Image (cartoon, rainbow, N blue to C red; front, side, top):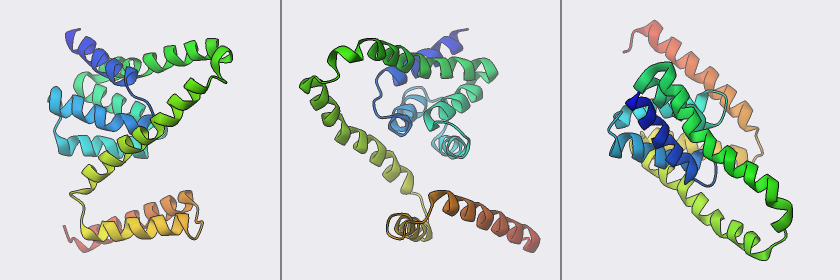
Length: 180
């Protein structure tokens, strides 16, 4: 029961003090489960993060489920997901109840505008730290993908499907040739 409570408290703290959505939670989750608690290794966290990105749903919820499951099975996944969801649920419920009273308040508007740069920074920092170990070819793939989406207006869904097909074809080619 102690491990479940610890999982719940760790993810509750992450859910309570994170603004900006799932990607903003990633550096906090990483710091908590790798640096502070030592529950999993960096390489394993990257694998869990990759899995969380490929699964449907918000990345922060998926990551918390995978970490919780890794640490304590189904009960751990449940404890982690409840920990990360309850703060947001309560805060949003409270805001929804009282929002009509202060939605046009200039201080509230200024506070939300002031949070935007911090949220961008919370997203950019983990991207840079995760990219440190990449092969240079991946940087070219990232650049071409960004160009295709922003400049040529290609659909990100189409690019993801094409990348999935290319990845499967590559793995089948490698398996057939016995390269690994």
